[in-house]
Image (cartoon, rainbow, N blue to C red; front, side):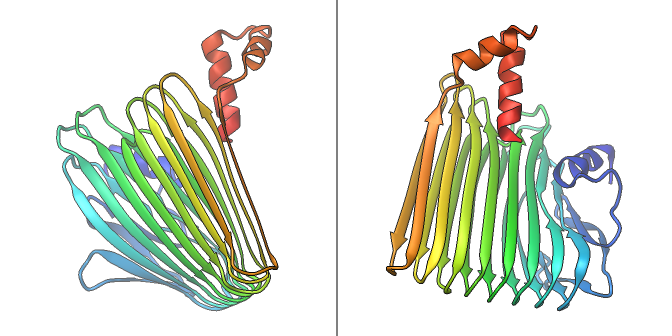
Length: 305
């Protein structure tokens, strides 16, 4: 990989070099590196447009990295990856996409990740999106995440998009079995004329299943954000959806939470708040020696942590 791709790798996966353990690195539509372990196998699909990741039952304290890097202007791709996580696993999965576009043509990555989480398995999934480059072409990412959780499983998802992505439409759906628990944390910053849509749809089918969807976002300049959260309580369950957003300049934010109880023992809550930075917060920081711009940046950074 060249220097641009290595910088993208660091941004989306926190890696300064090729990782230890299982990994699959995709760069400009091709496999740039792969490693498997005794417990984690990665297999290419016959069409070349994706991989299957098989994690053996009982695998603990292991991780798998599957970043996607695009540095070729005008490249468009669709990739589908399936994760088969065995019973009683405890693993971390790090994904993400970085696009560097220095040309005039649009660069676009559409990805579909499907997770099949076994009984009593525990998964932490981290997905980061990042864009760079001074070309006039757009950087477009449209990830789809589909999750099926079996009895007693646990999944924690962290999705982050802080800079450089011109357009994104993220779709996340999940079906939970008995006692399954899903936590989703989204952090999002848009600026310029960027457009971001986040869609969450969760079916709480199993008894005592639960979900917590938490979104923190900041919209600046003339950017636009839309947050859509749908939770269906189909059994005795607990569901919570929360969108907390800061709006600045001439940006636009729309929050559309929806909860549906199809069982009398479904306990569902939704919250949504959109507002500007409080003036007293900025004044307080300015009394400590910060400029107004520095105070504003500090508040935004703290909000998105």
